[in-house]
Amino acid sequence: MYQDTPYYKIPFNPTALFQEDGGAIEMCSLAESIAQNIMLLITTRQGENRYNSSYGNAVWNIEFDNAATSVLWEETFTGSLMEQIAQHEPRIMAAKIQVRTAFVEHTYKTKKFSEIKRKATVVINATLTETGEPFNFSTEIFLSPMSVD
Image (cartoon, rainbow, N blue to C red):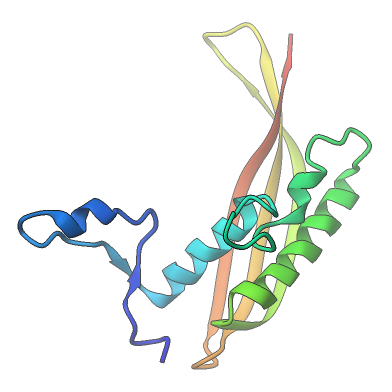
């Protein structure tokens, strides 16, 4: 069912539907569609989607909490993402999620300051529900910019 279905690529451009030539809507594979949905689950704050308040990661509720340790942040992120995948991504099962954070310093040559950001590395290993094939996803996101003179 899922394997042979074409999926819309994000971001979806609805204006292409109204072009004189019929427009071409970009399509993607099953794996890319799942990866796009996972990225939305990661980057959407829970409650941000007005049509589904349960969609999104609860970690963004503690992002600017100075008392939140890296361990708390990783645990909250992982637990919330696990729940989100179970609720909103039925095309994969048995997801194993690893999240690691590290601080990264970047010095700009043209500016006279350094910026420290938290980098989160997210790795997901799962199984495609329909075929039993492995599904692997990984990404890095940068958070919390902080400038240092």
